[in-house]
Image (spheres, rainbow, N blue to C red):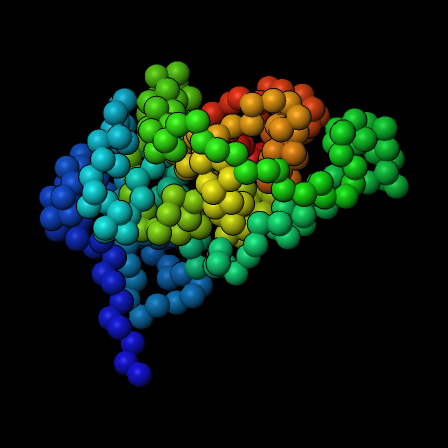
Length: 288
């Protein structure tokens, strides 16, 4: 049986049409990034394709909304996000850090086993002298994986929440010098894996496992990927848990997903639930 022709990577059109007019877009000046240092991905292909497009200059409030407002964006198979261009890590997306070919396929994973394994890898081991302090760190949970938090109904449209958060992060200086970026991906949660992002490499090398979790948060909490930095990930949340009781199992998921948020931040799952989860529409993650 003859296979259908592969859909053209829409980014290839931007090489000849930098502002994306043929795609129905009106982009600022930008550059196509063709992957890590000119080397082909581990899953070598006969012909290389563009990896992502990023604006040449920082963008301001409303830029992400203007781009995402185009119905042609999804039709072109592109997702629009912001990149954090932080001092000392300028242009990190060109620094030979992206490894799309080294990632597995998120479709091959399921969220519960992924988080259970993450949890087992980060909870303290009483046999290594981490008994009392470790128990306080993960209380009210024990060493056994506590299970997934319950799904919640969004309080607002997830896309509107994402765009509002993007503007807030720019105004508040959380994203200094943000760049607009386009990545070929089927959904927002797939962006980190599709571009080969390795910001969590000190915790997990296979970003597809992280994408599996973010996909589940999309479905259970109306989460959306808004921005990525060298080692940071920012999500908007349209259905944050409203109470501490509801937030605790979510905080446990966050600890498994990004233990540095608790280890080097709140200090315990209880404190983290109060400070960063209960009623909070911005979930930010940072891996040391």
